[in-house]
Image 1 (cartoon, helix red, strand yellow):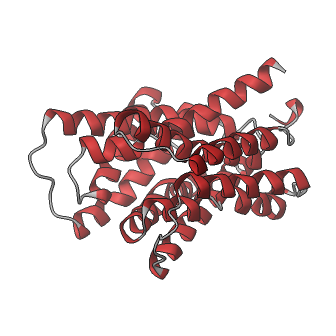
Image 2 (cartoon, one colour; image 1 turned 135 degrees about the vertical axis):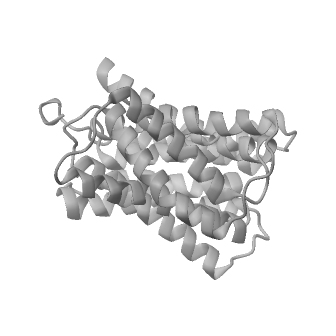
Length: 288
C-alpha cells in the first residue's frame, strides 16, 4: 500500500506543477512567443539531462523517441498553444480534459486493458469538474481552436499509452532526457519559421524560462514517466485533472481572482474523480 500511495503521490506532483504554467507564462514571460518559449522549455532541459545521463538511444529507440517526443511535447504543445490563442482558457482546459477518457480506450486497443465502469465514471466526473472550475457561461467556441484542443489531447493520450507499451530499457531520467531533446529539436525549426526572435530578456523572463524548463519540464516529466511505468495509463492520465485545479488555486491566491461557488463545487468533483480513478487497477508488481 505504501508503494502504491508513493507512486500516486510522486506522479501527481507532475500535473500539479504543470498547473503553474499559466501564471508563470503570464507573469514572467514576454507575450506572443509560445513556440519559442516551448522550445526554450524543452531543448535546454533535455540537453542538460542528456549530458547528465550520458546515454543515447540505440536501434529502434531512435524512431520511438522522436515519435514520443512529437506526441508528448512538440505536437502536443503546438496544439495546446493554438487552442489557448483561439479559445478562452476555460474552453481550452475543458476540451483538453477529454484526454483521460481517450487514454481508457487507447489502453484497451494498444495494451489489451479492460475498460472498467469505474474508470469511465471517474473520467466523466473529472471532465465535469474541470468545466465547473474554468468554463464561463458565455465562452465562445472557435471550431479550429476546439479541433486543436482535441488534437492535443489525443496526442498526449497516445504518448501516455505508448510510453507504457514500449516500456523503455532505461531509467525515467534517461527516458525524459531523450524525449525532451527530441521534442525540442522538432520544435526549434517551427519556432524559427513562425515567430520573430525573442526581445532582450529581463531577469524575471530568464527566471520564468528556467522554472518551466528545469521544474515544469525536466523534473515533472521524470516523475511522469516513472509513474507511467508503474500505474495503469487511465490512473496516471486522470491525475491530469489536477492541473486546472492548481491553476485556479494559484490564480485565486496570487492574482486576486475570485472563486465562485461553482468553482468550489468543481474542486470537490475533480478531487473525487481523481480519488475514484486511483481506485482502479494499478500495474501488478510482477509486471513493473
